[in-house]
Image (tube, rainbow, N blue to C red):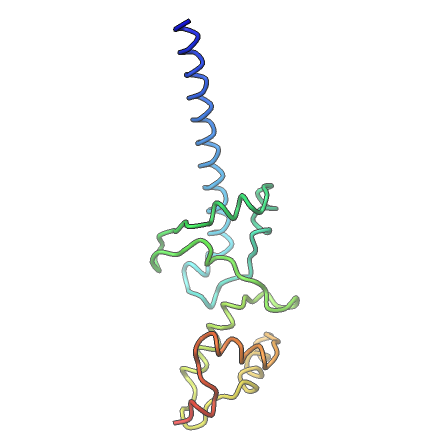
Length: 160
């Protein structure tokens, strides 16, 4: 009886150890894939964040989206730029023609506004035109929305 009991407990412990190893392997695969895709973001900053969805990672790893969501929820990595929440690696495409994320575009808008002539600040339309030169085609109202998210006032309020 005791031998049977101990054998059963050993089987349960072995299954638990196997499950933990499989989970850790899945975590490692997912995080390595995310870091590989977003390596420029990790090294150079927000401006280099590529559009990435949970479904992109889940299809690559052959798991359900909810699995990737659980893997990335409340998880952080430490890199040269500091501690980064894994959820920050995910961003949508702005349009189907572009390979630029919304986070990256907000970063570009912020840079443009910081370096603008304070006596003659850039309008949303002029920001749109400058982005179009970089093959980033978004609507002027989208720029206004991103500017509001960044808490950047309109050009008339930025005039010095």
